[in-house]
Length: 101
Image 1 (spheres, rainbow, N blue to C red):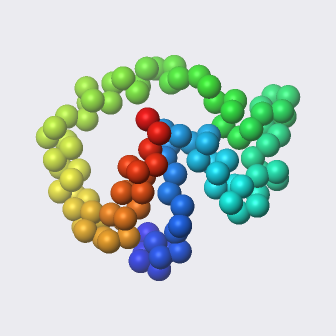
Image 2: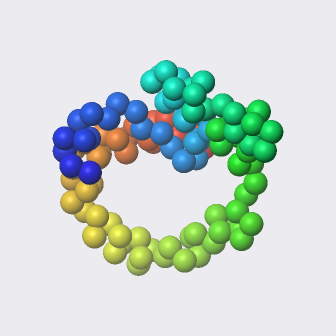
């Protein structure tokens, strides 16, 4: 994202807390009733409320097996410029601050 877009951001959510963060965001912008409710097979669940199952493949447990230290180092090198972007660094700090895991 360009610097212009980052300046407009005032909310950073976390996928670890996607249901609550989505609710918070939609309520902040006045879109909860229209987009946050009415989900699921009976249309009586909140958005992401129907997603209570874990990955069927167990992939969340395989991440560290495949994302080795050497791959992590390569990723850090490749995305070093992103981590120097002041807006991105600020956003990452917000994610860590509000991460509910």
